[in-house]
Length: 93
Image (cartoon, rainbow, N blue to C red; front, top):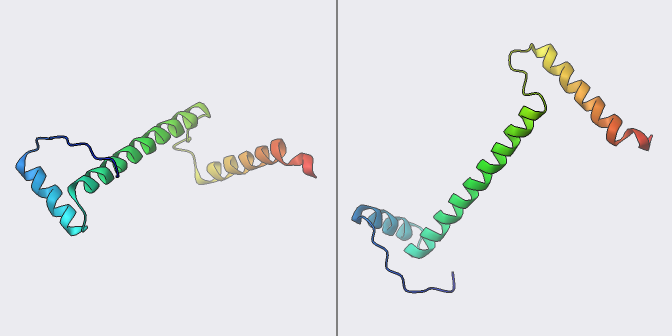
């Protein structure tokens, strides 16, 4: 982080101590630790959005068919593979 503006933030003493200890362990400063924590939080939000999107896509495609037998799952996967091949690759052969 190159641009630093002077800002005062009031934190509980225990939180400041934890941040300071983490910064010392990582041989950096508190600002860098806060930046990394914010980056992790942002990444987590993206993952949650992607997971929500994936869940919605699974729901729209008929769900996971929980409760089907192993054989039923295998057959469904085989059919999906055949469908994908026919729609995307069959014209190549």
